[in-house]
Image (cartoon, rainbow, N blue to C red; front, side, top):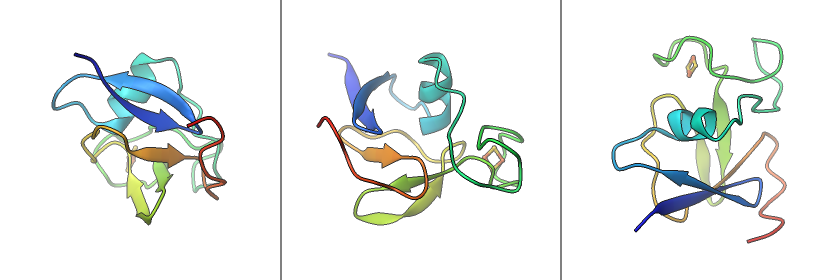
Length: 87
Ligand code: FES
């Protein structure tokens, strides 16, 4: 069974133990689309130091995608979060 979270309303598959960033990159979603200290929000350092990968989480505080394990059903999006359009 494949696990999924939702990115701006679209399902993204992930493997057990994979971070949100790893799953987004594997899906070809490198542009995280939010303002940050690195132009065009994206995975930059990959170790939690730059906050360029911060993403919004529905119902919770924003998280660093490069550090946060993906979980089934998470609803994530670019900052500011506008909610899940499709799910
Ligand atoms: S890529 Fe730098 S904190 Fe995630």
